[in-house]
Length: 197
Image (cartoon, rainbow, N blue to C red):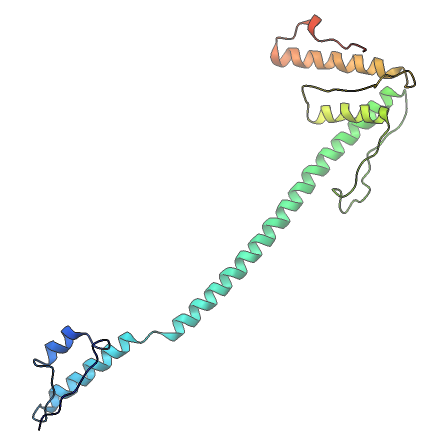
């Protein structure tokens, strides 16, 4: 009496199975030793085919940890950028404020002007309001901090303004001329003058 054992092809490696069974069938007269070898072989193949569910859980844990670390990195990077921006702003603000005070005193013959933060916790949220003379002093202070090659000003020396404006403007033009001459060495004396329009 022959009974055949059917083995699904997708569960067993056909080459290993054929090495064990020449014809692919188990019969009653098959010895016990061969049958046990076949069982051991099939169990080993079955173990190899089963996914390790612990590794899937471990992978999901690692992905969650990675995403958490990425969020922490983004938060720290954002915080660092904010602090860096604030430090650079305050450094420039303080430098400009000192120069503004000095220039305003020169323009107004002893007046006093200061830049102050309206909101020291969020210095980027408020504007600065100045009169014409204060604005002129601010422009020169900004030039001291980060020079720009061209300034266009309208009515900075109108009749209702104080006379020292013209004197200060001439002095600043003379300073700028010497700076440009040193850096470029192309600015002749006659081509760079302050003129009242």
